[in-house]
Image (cartoon, rainbow, N blue to C red; front, side, top):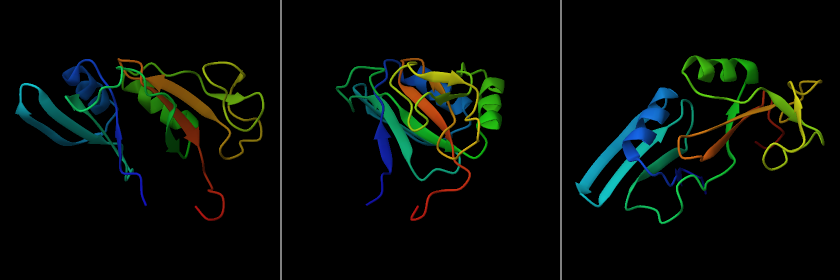
Length: 145
């Protein structure tokens, strides 16, 4: 099995589409069948998983999807690229426990992981509705990945 699509609840389809295109994501589809149904699909560069949002496709509250991970090779370069694209991104951080970030901003320690361990340095941002994303630095994947 492969995860291929994540549905995001948004309040304004065109605003969300513009935001994700600003990130440099590929627009795969924008289908309108009638005034009550529209599907927009975009894919991050290098990803096999896409996002879909639109009108009439989700009953979830806009902004309710939290903690979607985007894996990057260089956390500082990825953050800088998003900032250059006009996205408000947190500073790079690592978690006080050293394993996985706590919910919200609790336990965040400024700067990348001091040892630059894989899976341990993060930055975060949200789309205009508040759906949240986490950048996670991984240079060498654990065995079996």
